[in-house]
Image (cartoon, rainbow, N blue to C red; front, top):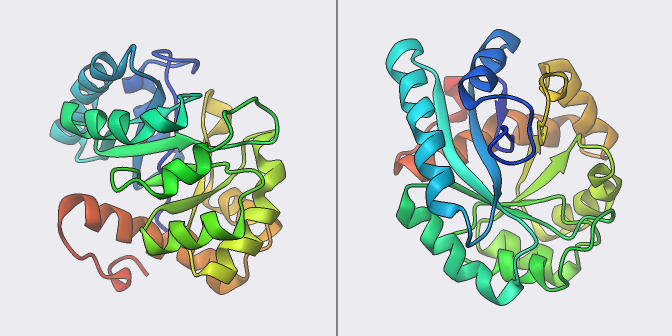
Length: 229
């Protein structure tokens, strides 16, 4: 089965690997496509996107493996998120992830709300104590909600599922990889989704259908789920 992941880090922020090594290890692990989304703020947006894009292009040219250069806007003032997300897309980031209000870090209050209101945000990662209104805005504005296997951050998965489901929001299962051992297998990703409270059908959507929706949106095309089932 295909395996997708839209949240990972290299040593350009706090990960362990060069982008190319992370890509290669993901290929060997069985990944179908991925995004590299190092931690970013106003200080390093352009540099990150430029550097990571080089290895993404090389992986496509030589291996036909699709890697999306992106960023994870992290601990930024909520009022700056819209501007920074737009700048990231302008610099060539294909995916903008927001470091949501996880239960284990002092993320500025209001980050979740600013993220789900922003048209340039694709994924709200580990949103912690997501509110009903934020979940509704995520559904309305097509911001994907992350179900994560990352230690600490995963403590909010159940709340994200409960409120996201009620609002009709779409989920993605991401690894938030920092080291090679964090990379998912299909079996483990499914376990994470089911453990967070997703049903079997919802797990299939989060693992297979929703990634194609995101990839299609980013490429301006429609990719049918049946293409990978």
